[in-house]
Amino acid sequence: MSRTALVTGGAVRVGRAIALGLAEEGFRLAVHYNRSSGPAEGVVEEIEAGGGAAASFQADLSQSASAGGLIRRVEERFGDLHALVNSASIYRPDTISEGTDEAWELIQAINVRAPFQLVREAAPLLTRTGGCVVNIVDLSAFQVWNRFGIHSVSKTALLKLTRVQARTLAPAVRVNAVAPGNVLPPEDDSEEEIEASRRRVPLGRIGDPTDVVGAVRYLVNAPYVTGEVVVVDGGRLLEP
Image 1: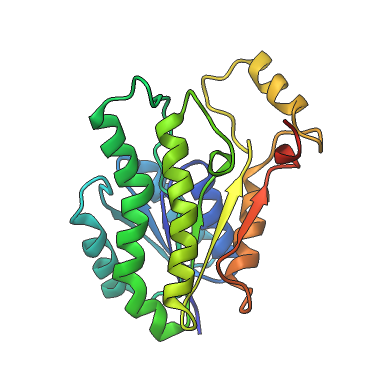
Image 2: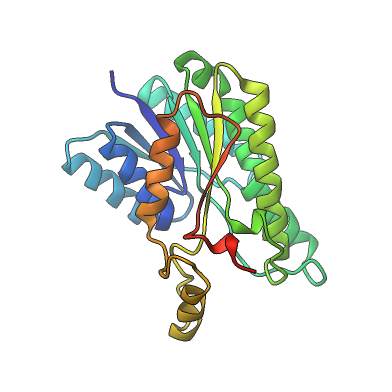
């Protein structure tokens, strides 16, 4: 029987790669997006062209009421849920010293509150199927990123949330995290910035979204792994 996966932020960048990778694994895909309707439909069309099943779902995860509605619509469309990948994220430079209350609330809402609410709302479905959750964090959960201070706090909180969810939902539902390093440099990074980033990676290259996909595919198929984080950074955390 086909399994169903919901990937938030599944229309673009790493989320898109995860959605396509899980479709290759045989999952039916619920592709969530907020504003990227065109790219989301492109992901759906690509999956369907390859013989898979997919549908796109719009939801503004900064709004507290959106999580429950998203899960209900996915259930109505597919009937079940086996994997939830919380990939939707906001990434912007807001320091702890100068960030506004509005920036704090927005970043925490999307990066922490939404995964909390989505897992809570999806837990009955995932319990029924013996499913799993994969939360996408990043290296700021382990490092202090001054320029992205509020973001760093949010990803640290999401990593702790992952472990609490894993303990709370066991044994029925597994919850893990993936922490990518620099796999898709920001679009406004200069060639010099990208090269400087590459030099800090022991494996000598910038990562590729497929590196993250491999970790996600491992976790959705690892029945004896929960409460863990897979770091996909080319060894970046080994460096100062």
